[in-house]
Length: 146
Image 1 (cartoon, rainbow, N blue to C red):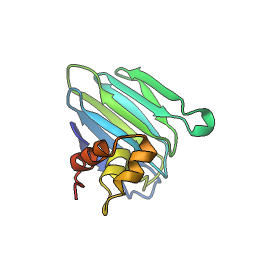
Image 2 (image 1 turned 30 degrees about the vertical axis):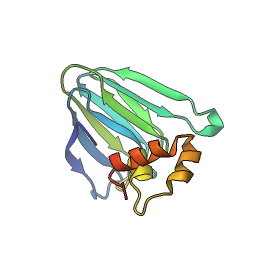
Image 3 (image 1 turned 90 degrees about the horizontal axis):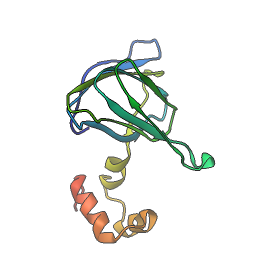
């Protein structure tokens, strides 16, 4: 998670929840990811975040977003691709709560372009409608250039 630091985490508490404090540098982000076993609620303590998720394909893959300020909350439904990014000029702080002790996190780009062994570039090029050289460049950026 580039430009974002998770300072504390409460997990394995037998309460069926996880909680995180997230500190964002200016332009810091939590890149597109999913939690396969939990919904998430994000509370902004300081700064300004842009947050959103994409509905499932049976709802036409609609992007739902909001600019969040201090005191605002945003809910990300279980299993949907979502993100949050600091759009302010200063640091931002948020708390994240998930309704599972083991929510899991799958970061989309890292998972696809950093898989070991790698997914065949020709397949990814066709799946994402990209030039195969773009796929190879993405694999190099995500640590899977061989």
